[in-house]
Amino acid sequence: MLERMNTVIASPDVSIRAGAVPEDVEHCADLWVRALQARDGAVDDAVMRRRVRDAFLAPIVRFAVATAPRAGFSLVESIPEDPAAALLHYLAVDPEGSGRGVGRALLEDAAHRTREAGFTSLILEVRTANDRAISLYTGFGFVPFGSPTPHPTAGYPMQTYALRLA
Image (cartoon, rainbow, N blue to C red; front, side, top):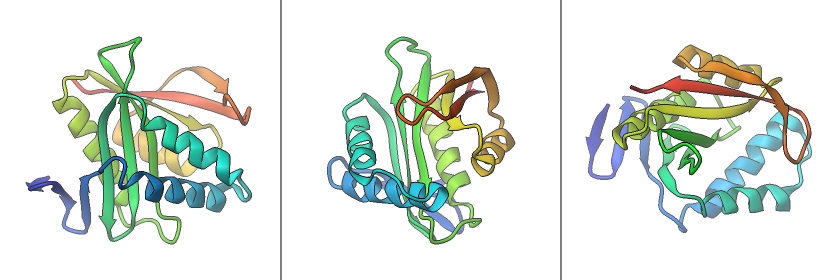
């Protein structure tokens, strides 16, 4: 991984930069809604946008924006109850295309920056029916942790995964 100023080149084909709050937040909220619509069909646009905006109120470990070849973003937050762990709260790639390594590059960036910040583990929650995301996460080394629990607003089952960083 090469670093030039504020832009990280995760691979020759993917450019990632540090996200800027508040400048990039609306773009990321829009991207999240479009990704959910592509995956699930209809979503409550206003609720999803508010949830993304609210996530930026938490202590941010890393906010990254992919700019090429597809737009994407990731948001890692600290967890007050566990100062050694960080939460990968969001990872989304523009639904217009996939399979170009943007998701993996954002995941690599999140793990690298979280480790650099002194955290020893990175956790995330994923919908148990999201096979594509689960394949990405387990291929990267994340392992299931605990039993699935209902999503707080939608009710569908969510599985926690963890990655040891140290």
